[in-house]
Length: 266
Length: 194
Image (cartoon, each protein chain N blue to C red):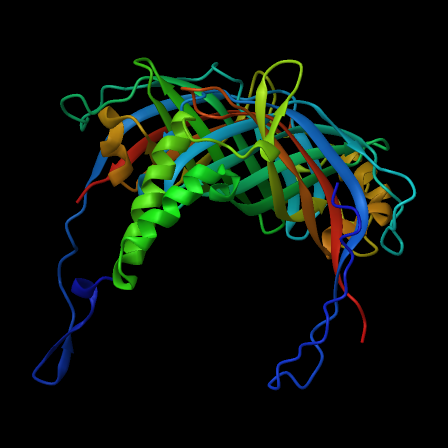
């Protein structure tokens, strides 16, 4: 999944860009997350004019690490369990799926790590060709001045139809597992992490025996995971939703590969 | 500051209002959340100690208490908290910071989503007391209670409860601490109603 993402942005050919583009490196692999999901209430919550909200809870999942991939300098790896989490998905009225999630991980050496992520997915790209052709035809029938209006109407159509699961999905996004026909939605999210990142900072040199032992224990392994709280990360993966005619898509499982977002030194 | 709260200028000098703007709080509902004994204690992060606290699913009633000022007509909510999580931060400056998301399932089948932030002042040296091993704060027989203040907003797809989305709400609560752990939290929720 998303291997070989490492790329060096090529130098711009624009005459305005005399200096080289920033050499962004996306690709130092850190670990992978996967979990089944649980939807307490399949009916969405109307989020005012923004769209519809689906609340998705994580079941216990896995934190794994694929060997043999390029990792950030100083990264000692992370394996363990995904304990809990939630994603407050918003299907926006313009056909964009907005992700807003928080999960808690526990490493094999008992360190707890919070992961926070946000991201956007263009759901209209999932649609099968006839729908897109119809969109194009309707746009062609409108003058340039009314294209925005037409797009708004199409977004509204999409929102209504997607929630009823009546729209055709392109076959490359449809997967069939042992249980049901599903849509596999590609995800790109930005991720940040929180973990016990160091000794109690307000009292250097102070006797810390008064602090609960478990908090002190958390700090013993901070050096292994300090990179997580000091860098920016991206997650690349899939959200799998059950897809049945006449019902809203139902989130079933999620998986990410987590990469450090780095900037190479000049 | 709204336009009406700006100082008025009359004959070249600033005239300030002598009366407050109209305001009102409309009681909506209450809930007493029982919390999971399991919690994810992330530990020391910049600013304090991060602790994730979970409400026991479907174990918290949302109910209406007869008060002097109650909502009228059908504008009441009764049900239970479907699920809820607080990503809390016990700050080193003796303030607890709340970041809550929860879902209410009403008895008549509506789903109401809520998210809010809030604070609970943990008192003098409250941070040190809460993360100290000895002595632990509160006991089963004598739990320690502390005030907590939140500002919820609600969303729902159900037209019967669409009215609640039109209000900014405030909640006044009490948390109960046993053995340095937040065991339960009770809130009265009001709508800011001009």
